[in-house]
Image 1: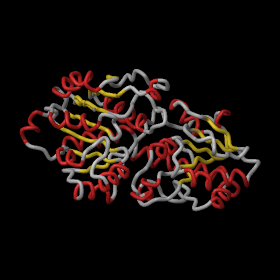
Image 2 (image 1 turned 30 degrees about the vertical axis):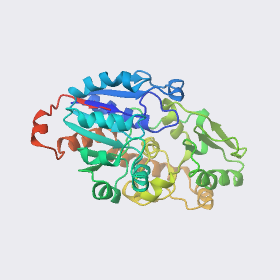
Image 3 (image 1 turned 90 degrees about the horizontal axis):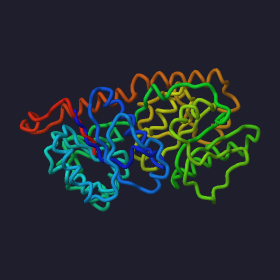
Length: 372
């Protein structure tokens, strides 16, 4: 298939989780014989922190001006089997309009921010990247969130078909590595600053660090304000290139996962960091939310602290052998259910089983896919 994608970014993972998600999916689709074209608008914070400027698995169309790139997009859409616009794409509304007006056989939206999108559509009726009245024109609404919200997207927002397409990881890149001295610590956390996550980070990392002065803590991620007061035994890495992520996860006794409030309320919204850490057999301690037990078994594949006391207990009372057993169990779980190849197969099945007119179906050519 030829797949045309318009997404927030695939060339830079700076301050966003979209890039690694698109990379994993596009890389596996390419490996399965599909052609990928990715449109990305230039942004200063991405262009100055571009960690994958020329992906080998897709053609990237970087642009500064929408009107200038429009002829190229239209030309790609003419031969596209699948078109996709991602959430938070800067020219999302215009891109969806072009996609719906095009001859692309299958027209899709990939919502990597489903709870946020749905909340905006419910309150204001539209978002800056998709209009409510554009949703019924889609063949497939891919969602980062599963569970009950899929039914809400169909019943309340008029989507023809809402399908979960969770994040994933590439097992060739994410696996267990020897402990790296640079990342060695007792508890680590990786994530961009978010005001609604910070109180949990304070309770589940900063407070244990203050209580356990002989333990070492590590936080990697950008955009934290200067007002945050880190404990003296908590080191900071401003931004970590994705190539080092598996080494990071492989080097701490426990790694922490903290979820955005909207994702917690919606449930069934695993972050890419959760699967990547598990792929490295890292023992994970995570905040809890509805649906998490459909991805990992509590106590066997993941630890679910409810307070700083629990984190202190994990660090002081659980031996390394038991922690490593939990990490290996999580690794086996994600290898069987959440690799990028599995996600690519799910994508193929969703677009092949779409509910569209027979005339469009007859034009579908399984040799090409295009992503917006």
